[in-house]
Image (cartoon, rainbow, N blue to C red; front, side):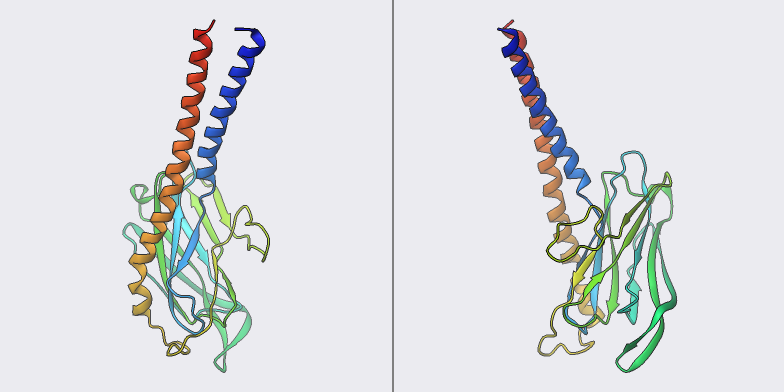
Length: 242
Protein backbone atom coordinates (compact mmCIF):
# COMPACT_ATOMS: atom_id res chain seq x y z
CA UNK A 1 0.00 0.00 0.00
CA UNK A 2 1.28 3.45 -0.86
CA UNK A 3 2.26 5.73 2.00
CA UNK A 4 -0.39 8.32 1.08
CA UNK A 5 -3.13 5.67 1.10
CA UNK A 6 -1.90 4.27 4.41
CA UNK A 7 -1.93 7.74 5.97
CA UNK A 8 -5.47 8.30 4.71
CA UNK A 9 -6.70 5.06 6.29
CA UNK A 10 -5.02 5.82 9.60
CA UNK A 11 -6.35 9.37 9.64
CA UNK A 12 -9.87 8.10 8.97
CA UNK A 13 -9.56 5.55 11.77
CA UNK A 14 -8.42 8.20 14.20
CA UNK A 15 -11.27 10.49 13.15
CA UNK A 16 -13.87 7.78 13.67
CA UNK A 17 -12.40 6.85 17.05
CA UNK A 18 -12.32 10.49 18.14
CA UNK A 19 -15.93 10.98 17.07
CA UNK A 20 -16.96 7.98 19.14
CA UNK A 21 -15.10 9.23 22.18
CA UNK A 22 -16.58 12.71 21.74
CA UNK A 23 -20.05 11.21 21.64
CA UNK A 24 -19.33 9.43 24.90
CA UNK A 25 -17.97 12.57 26.48
CA UNK A 26 -20.85 14.73 25.32
CA UNK A 27 -23.29 12.25 26.75
CA UNK A 28 -21.73 12.72 30.18
CA UNK A 29 -21.31 16.49 29.89
CA UNK A 30 -24.94 17.04 28.92
CA UNK A 31 -26.15 15.81 32.30
CA UNK A 32 -27.27 18.57 34.65
CA UNK A 33 -29.66 19.16 37.52
CA UNK A 34 -33.23 19.41 36.24
CA UNK A 35 -36.71 19.64 37.72
CA UNK A 36 -39.90 17.75 36.82
CA UNK A 37 -43.03 19.26 38.39
CA UNK A 38 -45.98 16.95 38.98
CA UNK A 39 -48.24 19.87 38.06
CA UNK A 40 -47.72 23.38 36.71
CA UNK A 41 -51.23 24.73 37.35
CA UNK A 42 -51.24 28.31 38.60
CA UNK A 43 -52.66 28.71 42.09
CA UNK A 44 -52.14 25.07 42.98
CA UNK A 45 -49.67 22.89 44.83
CA UNK A 46 -47.17 20.57 43.20
CA UNK A 47 -44.37 18.14 43.83
CA UNK A 48 -41.03 19.23 42.39
CA UNK A 49 -38.67 16.34 41.59
CA UNK A 50 -35.03 17.36 41.16
CA UNK A 51 -32.90 14.82 39.29
CA UNK A 52 -29.27 15.24 40.36
CA UNK A 53 -26.59 13.34 38.39
CA UNK A 54 -22.97 13.37 39.53
CA UNK A 55 -20.55 14.34 36.75
CA UNK A 56 -17.13 14.39 38.40
CA UNK A 57 -14.86 11.43 37.63
CA UNK A 58 -12.66 12.13 40.65
CA UNK A 59 -15.04 13.32 43.39
CA UNK A 60 -18.46 12.54 44.85
CA UNK A 61 -21.52 14.77 45.08
CA UNK A 62 -21.97 15.50 48.77
CA UNK A 63 -24.45 18.39 48.80
CA UNK A 64 -27.13 19.97 46.62
CA UNK A 65 -28.75 23.34 47.35
CA UNK A 66 -31.88 24.54 45.54
CA UNK A 67 -32.68 28.24 45.71
CA UNK A 68 -36.38 29.13 45.70
CA UNK A 69 -37.97 32.19 44.07
CA UNK A 70 -38.22 35.33 46.18
CA UNK A 71 -40.30 37.47 43.81
CA UNK A 72 -43.07 34.84 43.77
CA UNK A 73 -42.31 32.98 47.02
CA UNK A 74 -43.95 29.70 47.95
CA UNK A 75 -46.11 29.96 51.06
CA UNK A 76 -45.70 26.24 51.74
CA UNK A 77 -42.49 24.18 51.34
CA UNK A 78 -41.92 20.66 52.61
CA UNK A 79 -38.97 18.38 51.83
CA UNK A 80 -39.49 14.69 51.23
CA UNK A 81 -37.08 12.52 53.29
CA UNK A 82 -34.29 10.80 51.34
CA UNK A 83 -32.41 7.89 52.90
CA UNK A 84 -28.83 8.87 53.70
CA UNK A 85 -29.42 12.60 53.20
CA UNK A 86 -30.44 15.39 55.58
CA UNK A 87 -32.59 18.25 54.32
CA UNK A 88 -32.36 21.79 55.69
CA UNK A 89 -35.15 24.25 54.88
CA UNK A 90 -33.82 27.80 55.19
CA UNK A 91 -36.21 30.67 55.91
CA UNK A 92 -35.34 34.34 55.82
CA UNK A 93 -36.32 37.86 54.88
CA UNK A 94 -37.33 38.46 51.28
CA UNK A 95 -35.40 41.11 49.29
CA UNK A 96 -38.68 42.99 48.79
CA UNK A 97 -42.11 42.56 50.40
CA UNK A 98 -44.55 40.59 48.20
CA UNK A 99 -48.34 40.71 48.22
CA UNK A 100 -50.09 37.33 48.01
CA UNK A 101 -53.88 37.03 48.25
CA UNK A 102 -54.10 40.48 49.79
CA UNK A 103 -51.47 39.77 52.44
CA UNK A 104 -48.01 41.33 52.51
CA UNK A 105 -45.28 38.70 52.85
CA UNK A 106 -41.87 39.78 54.12
CA UNK A 107 -40.38 36.37 54.95
CA UNK A 108 -40.33 33.02 53.21
CA UNK A 109 -38.37 29.87 52.42
CA UNK A 110 -35.23 30.93 50.56
CA UNK A 111 -33.60 27.58 49.87
CA UNK A 112 -33.46 23.88 50.65
CA UNK A 113 -30.17 22.01 51.02
CA UNK A 114 -29.66 18.24 51.05
CA UNK A 115 -26.39 16.95 52.53
CA UNK A 116 -25.15 13.35 52.45
CA UNK A 117 -24.94 11.82 55.92
CA UNK A 118 -21.74 9.91 55.14
CA UNK A 119 -19.27 9.15 52.36
CA UNK A 120 -21.20 5.97 51.58
CA UNK A 121 -24.29 8.07 50.79
CA UNK A 122 -22.52 10.47 48.41
CA UNK A 123 -23.12 10.12 44.66
CA UNK A 124 -20.48 8.76 42.30
CA UNK A 125 -20.20 9.55 38.59
CA UNK A 126 -22.32 6.46 37.86
CA UNK A 127 -25.19 7.48 40.15
CA UNK A 128 -27.96 10.04 40.47
CA UNK A 129 -30.58 10.84 43.08
CA UNK A 130 -34.04 12.40 43.03
CA UNK A 131 -34.82 15.02 45.68
CA UNK A 132 -38.42 16.16 46.08
CA UNK A 133 -40.26 19.19 47.46
CA UNK A 134 -43.95 19.77 47.99
CA UNK A 135 -44.59 23.47 47.29
CA UNK A 136 -47.41 25.91 46.77
CA UNK A 137 -49.01 27.96 45.76
CA UNK A 138 -47.76 28.39 42.20
CA UNK A 139 -47.73 31.90 40.71
CA UNK A 140 -49.96 33.14 37.90
CA UNK A 141 -50.10 31.54 34.46
CA UNK A 142 -47.05 32.10 32.25
CA UNK A 143 -44.59 32.68 35.09
CA UNK A 144 -41.16 31.12 34.67
CA UNK A 145 -40.22 29.56 37.99
CA UNK A 146 -36.41 29.39 38.09
CA UNK A 147 -34.81 27.20 40.76
CA UNK A 148 -31.01 27.65 40.64
CA UNK A 149 -29.07 24.71 42.06
CA UNK A 150 -25.60 24.55 43.59
CA UNK A 151 -23.91 21.13 43.50
CA UNK A 152 -20.94 20.59 45.83
CA UNK A 153 -18.39 17.79 45.42
CA UNK A 154 -16.23 16.06 48.01
CA UNK A 155 -13.05 17.72 46.68
CA UNK A 156 -14.51 21.19 47.26
CA UNK A 157 -15.40 21.91 43.64
CA UNK A 158 -18.81 23.41 42.88
CA UNK A 159 -21.15 23.28 39.88
CA UNK A 160 -23.61 26.18 39.69
CA UNK A 161 -26.73 25.49 37.65
CA UNK A 162 -28.00 29.06 37.68
CA UNK A 163 -28.25 30.36 34.12
CA UNK A 164 -31.83 31.14 33.13
CA UNK A 165 -32.59 30.41 29.47
CA UNK A 166 -34.00 33.28 27.43
CA UNK A 167 -37.04 32.67 25.24
CA UNK A 168 -36.00 31.60 21.74
CA UNK A 169 -32.33 31.26 22.70
CA UNK A 170 -30.26 28.10 22.96
CA UNK A 171 -29.95 26.37 26.31
CA UNK A 172 -27.13 27.93 28.36
CA UNK A 173 -24.08 25.94 29.43
CA UNK A 174 -25.22 25.71 33.07
CA UNK A 175 -29.02 25.95 32.92
CA UNK A 176 -31.03 26.52 36.07
CA UNK A 177 -33.85 24.03 36.68
CA UNK A 178 -37.09 25.79 35.73
CA UNK A 179 -40.65 25.41 34.50
CA UNK A 180 -43.50 27.65 33.33
CA UNK A 181 -46.86 27.76 35.10
CA UNK A 182 -50.03 27.00 33.16
CA UNK A 183 -53.62 28.19 33.36
CA UNK A 184 -55.95 27.15 36.14
CA UNK A 185 -58.37 24.45 35.04
CA UNK A 186 -62.04 24.08 35.94
CA UNK A 187 -62.40 22.70 39.44
CA UNK A 188 -58.79 23.58 40.27
CA UNK A 189 -58.98 27.02 41.75
CA UNK A 190 -56.42 28.79 43.87
CA UNK A 191 -54.77 26.23 46.11
CA UNK A 192 -57.20 23.46 45.14
CA UNK A 193 -54.50 20.95 44.19
CA UNK A 194 -53.52 19.18 47.40
CA UNK A 195 -50.10 18.07 48.51
CA UNK A 196 -51.35 14.48 48.47
CA UNK A 197 -52.21 14.78 44.77
CA UNK A 198 -48.74 16.15 44.06
CA UNK A 199 -47.05 13.39 46.03
CA UNK A 200 -49.08 10.72 44.23
CA UNK A 201 -47.26 11.68 41.01
CA UNK A 202 -43.80 11.28 42.58
CA UNK A 203 -43.15 7.69 41.50
CA UNK A 204 -44.36 8.40 37.97
CA UNK A 205 -42.12 11.46 37.65
CA UNK A 206 -39.07 9.65 39.03
CA UNK A 207 -39.64 6.76 36.62
CA UNK A 208 -39.97 9.17 33.70
CA UNK A 209 -36.73 10.90 34.65
CA UNK A 210 -34.88 7.58 34.78
CA UNK A 211 -36.35 6.38 31.47
CA UNK A 212 -35.26 9.56 29.66
CA UNK A 213 -31.80 9.70 31.21
CA UNK A 214 -30.68 6.10 30.78
CA UNK A 215 -31.15 5.88 26.96
CA UNK A 216 -28.94 8.95 26.43
CA UNK A 217 -26.16 7.37 28.48
CA UNK A 218 -26.39 4.02 26.66
CA UNK A 219 -26.46 5.65 23.21
CA UNK A 220 -23.35 7.67 24.05
CA UNK A 221 -21.58 4.57 25.37
CA UNK A 222 -22.48 2.56 22.25
CA UNK A 223 -21.21 5.36 20.00
CA UNK A 224 -17.91 5.43 21.84
CA UNK A 225 -17.45 1.66 21.61
CA UNK A 226 -18.33 1.62 17.91
CA UNK A 227 -15.78 4.36 17.28
CA UNK A 228 -13.07 2.41 19.08
CA UNK A 229 -13.94 -0.78 17.19
CA UNK A 230 -13.86 0.99 13.83
CA UNK A 231 -10.49 2.53 14.58
CA UNK A 232 -8.99 -0.80 15.66
CA UNK A 233 -10.33 -2.58 12.56
CA UNK A 234 -8.88 0.05 10.26
CA UNK A 235 -5.46 -0.26 11.90
CA UNK A 236 -5.54 -4.06 11.60
CA UNK A 237 -6.36 -3.84 7.90
CA UNK A 238 -3.57 -1.34 7.34
CA UNK A 239 -1.00 -3.61 8.94
CA UNK A 240 -2.21 -6.68 7.01
CA UNK A 241 -1.68 -4.93 3.66
CA UNK A 242 1.90 -3.95 4.33
